[in-house]
Image 1 (cartoon, rainbow, N blue to C red):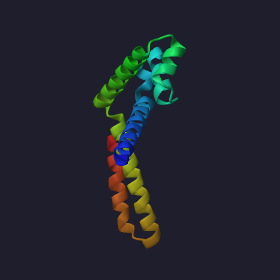
Image 2 (tube, rainbow, N blue to C red):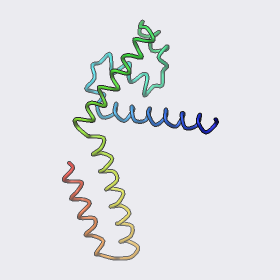
Image 3 (cartoon, helix red, strand yellow):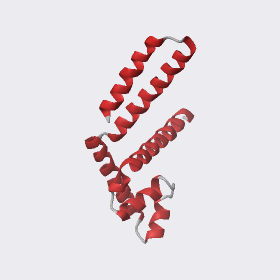
Image 4 (cartoon, rainbow, N blue to C red):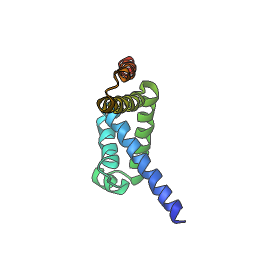
Length: 126
């Protein structure tokens, strides 16, 4: 039972992080009122009730707005793939860093080819 609770908390946290990332990339595309509500819920960690009281809305109205915003932001990612590209770029940069550290230690110049390949992949994504 404890493991189920921990998994649920981890899933909720992962979902919150994912929403935060979506907001970072696409939040400016939301209308101002929706953006503020979503920001309060996801980034400022206000409860639905707190946001509702502050804005003179029902809790259900805030919930519906957050849910619609989530769907809208997810739709932007499906179309534009900016987060996917960001993650791939970050992964490639980490690989380049590791290779550079290996070169520094081993002085193996052939590893530079790997850096060239990865950097070309990054440039192609951009």
